[in-house]
Length: 178
Length: 308
Image (cartoon, rainbow over all chains, first blue to last red; front, top):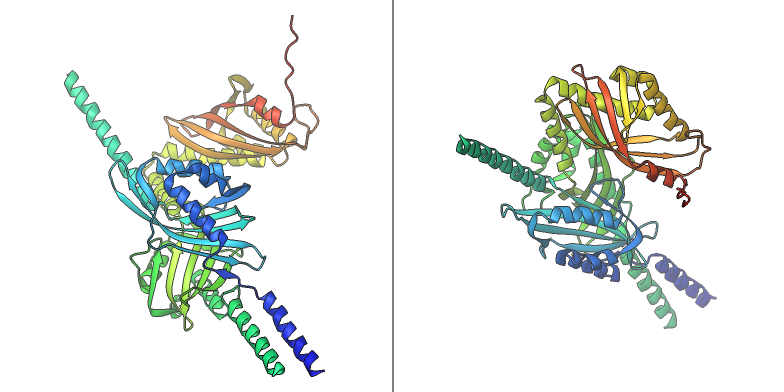
């Protein structure tokens, strides 16, 4: 009788243990995929970058509005066209995966983006956070948080400098004509 | 002996699973601490807010290397809040507690911040992520991630508005209100913003010669598409004219141009040039859009002409 009781107890513990499966991971196949995704971004390999997303993936970068991977890619390319180099550095980079209360797998990423603005060689350092849901090895949802204010300020500065240059050129041309 | 073995096994299994379970959770005292922190921020209860931080806490907002102190962070928050008539995080927030590989407890937060600017009542919405390290019941490190350029752009717009000629200010306000009148199918509001003989041309063809004809056109869209919505995507003003890109969406659940409803959705993108008079009233709109594209989305088809 006692044996049965003990067996039952052991089984209960075992079942409760089953229920308490690990929910936090610092390594997992999904984290490896996320690393490959960042690598593709750094290398500008957009075919590989796109291949990580499910066709129906919903992405939100600094907004609550949802976009497709193709739409986000277009936006990223627009930002990157002004840079002579860019990428996530190896410094301050963290990956983790959690399984949330809805049993969804989310990979959280914290990293440092560094880029050089082509027009004036100014270096930008932008911390980035991504939280990404994976289903069957594909990214189905992505939320990104990063501050573009420094980037925008540099772009505006370049733009206003160009305007001043144009004005000077116009004045010079007028003086030449006269 | 067997009994001891079984008990040992059960205990070790239990302990193992307890350890595993603790590394991720969505409730607990540390999460309550961060919830309290946000509640204090929303109430502006800075004494209570400050108490939740350790004296030596480091705050990193959108940067890794340099940190600010809790007092500096508070001053920053206060300065931003001074520009707002309301602010806060809504209900739709996510908290998690994790224990990292090096044994630190972090609370991760994802939320939607909304603030209204006092100056022009513009509502700013920012997705915000906070990652907060808690030790002995106090916040010792806070990392915040959000796009500050959204707020900076809104503040720059206010400055530009202040330096803008009076007529341009009126035109800007008026064409925002014109969009609102379109969305609400509000003929009275539309009439208050336009000249009596306001003209509308669509793709070069005259559609309206006065306010009544124009508002009839608005009504036609709202009858065909009861959920009709027009969004102003972008615009610029020059010499009393506004050049704007817009998007119209709607579901054709009502009769449209004498045709029965199709039940289909449409989304079209178009371009309009609005001309305003010296009082800021709209006198003419020249709209350009893909009419056939809209009808195709609704299921209409084009029949090629028969060969002669």
